[in-house]
Image 1 (cartoon, helix red, strand yellow):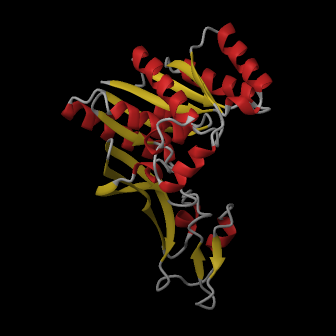
Image 2: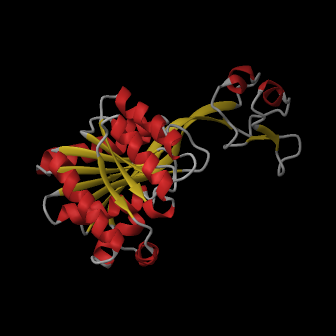
Length: 295
């Protein structure tokens, strides 16, 4: 089983739309398992039309909880909370409540409450799912707003996807990773054979590309680059090509700006399935051929 993760130095480069096209193309040649590890803003499912099969809770950190029937309203909890997570209760005069979003789970209020009216509870921070898509099983998740440990949730999703690959002898695990270089990206790279880095010819393209290349290099993952909307700024695209050539980084291909991509996304289809003859589809097909030969 080979594992390919699709990354980008920043959001909005077209990473997910390319992943969806690669999923469509790859599924015609080999068995495939898919994972969307952009758990803070998962959207691969919008293009794959999956049907959810299983759903699981993900528990994150701890949050404080005040038992109103025990609380005496002394206000000590509010005094010791440096995150300003303790509020006066709008429903109970003289009482207090915990702002779930602001609470960092430090337990200062738990230890300082003189009547032990505050406890620390592990909370459900999100959910992860197993779904069936036309291209193969999809493992994906969603974090609740303001919750933490998205890197741990990524690891949970990845492990489940890898286990499925091992049990079904699939040929490829294709991962739609998160943008940037944070903990979720690091967790997405675990075990990857190749990182496809999607960039675009913007002002910060080289800067963003350097950051993500340093990240994958640190973890020993081979990189390859493709340039999306390559014709909107030809001079910037040339800079990216020269940058990759100077560092012997393979350039898988260049995708031109194509309005059909937006139309296909609005309809919930990868562009390669929506219209195989449009310029973006042809370019994605060439990228898949080069990618396939490397894995």
